[in-house]
Image (tube, rainbow, N blue to C red; front, side, top):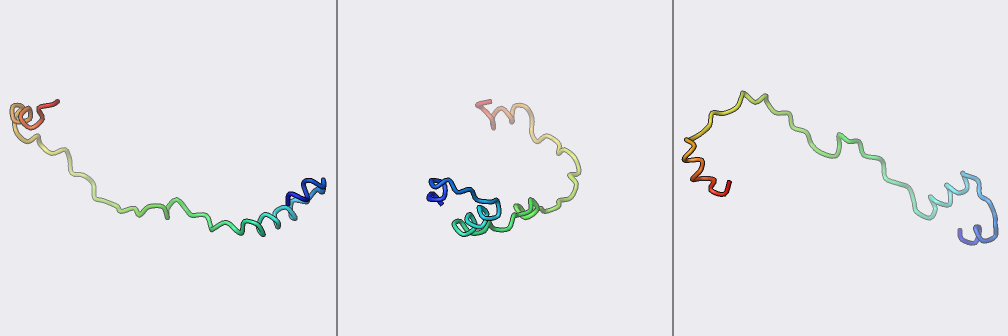
Length: 65
């Protein structure tokens, strides 16, 4: 391939593609985005749960905040 460049020989697109396939092989089939991860449908969340404990208890459990 380097020899063709040095000699000034021009390749057509088809010839260049054939040499590229010969040198590197074919690419694997392209993956669809749906195949990247498995999606699991979940049920709708019923609502926000009530707060547990008092403000004092929250301060005891989270002293750094």
